[in-house]
Structure formats: C-alpha cells, structure tokens
Image (tube, rainbow, N blue to C red; front, side):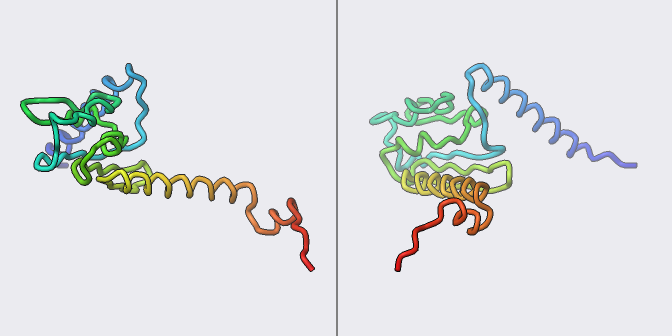
Length: 149
C-alpha cells in the first residue's frame, strides 16, 4: 500500500485555506456563493491613485492600496463583481468564478456582469413559472384566455 504524500499535503493545505477563509468572512456576515475563483487587475490600464473606486466598494476589503498599485488578498475575495461594476476602465479587473454546480462565469466589464446577472435571473424566473405550470394546459386551465372570433 502506497501513500501519496503530495495528495495528502495538498488536501490539508486546501482544507486549511477554507477554514482560514471561513474564519475571516464569518464575523463580517458575508455569505459565499462560489466555490472557487480568481481575480486579476491589469496594472497597465488601472487608473489606481486617480480613482480607487474598486477599493472603496469591495465588501470584504480584499482590494487595498499598496506601493502605487491596487493589491489583492485572494483569501478575502468573494468574487461578487462589485469592483468590476465600479471600475472606470473596461477590461481592467477580470473575475472568474465557479459555482457549486460547476458552472464557470467570467467577466471584466460592467456590461458582461449585467448580462450574466440577467441570464441568471431569467433562468430563475423560467424555473418558477415551470414549477407553477409544468404543462401549457395547466396555465390555460387556470387563466382561460378569451377566444377571439
């Protein structure tokens, strides 16, 4: 029987990372919706000291000002997209996040984020209607449209 020490170490590191993250986010009342993700800032296009809007809107203070540029604390980021929505430069901040169902979402402009949210909300609305009326006949029997001659 062989033991894969690398696998054991990586599992332990991942578990410790999750525990550390939970310990930091629980006191501030932030709920996590994404199991994994990444955030990156293009320092060539970032206006940094001129705006600092992303730093101001971050709900977990994962973005901070450091030595002339915006820094990121990955363990604090919840990939909510507030920074992308507030950024004055398109494609400056890129967020990639993974939902519990395995779906990966990526956006770097307010337009991309809003389209993504609209798509998610449309799916939820469709699901609600489908739950209420599984078949078209169910809808018609309840609302009996007037027949036009």
